[in-house]
Image (cartoon, rainbow, N blue to C red; front, side, top):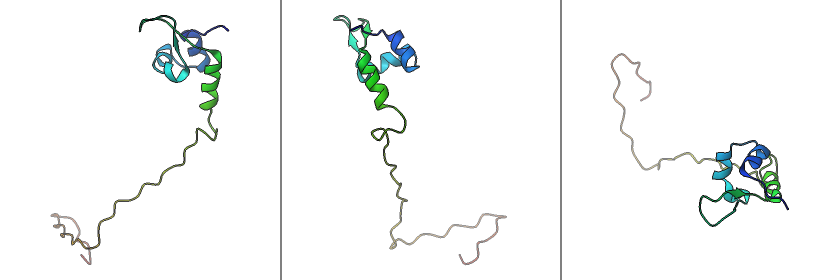
Length: 94
């Protein structure tokens, strides 16, 4: 099985090599050596799985939208009236 380089993966996923290096753990990157600077290699199956998981419209990728709850003030708090600014119309009923 031939391993892919960062340049090959970048071309496959249409992203930069820097992006590929930054996302190596989720792409299944393997260091070809024992140091932190050892070159990265990727299994083609891992890249295909990542592409499948990030395809738009897949049920796993869709998250339900959470509705924001509006901040509500308690009914037992009395609010202070706002002072009228000079030159602004007064609000009737205030």
